[in-house]
Length: 68
Image (tube, rainbow, N blue to C red; front, top):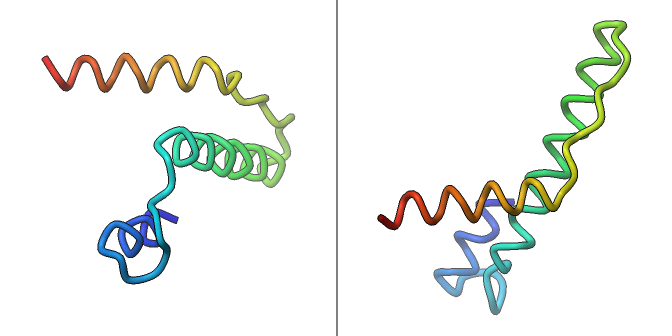
């Protein structure tokens, strides 16, 4: 998915890159699925992902920390 965003930013594939919120959501969603599938494959009860809002707030904190 990040590769598609890279193409979009260079104007080679899509008219516009994905908004930051969409990229954060996509990463949160896919990471959650991977973790749950891994847990299930190991015979463990899949752990629920943290709520998306928490992920967004953490991302904002990271961006603020990196901009200082």
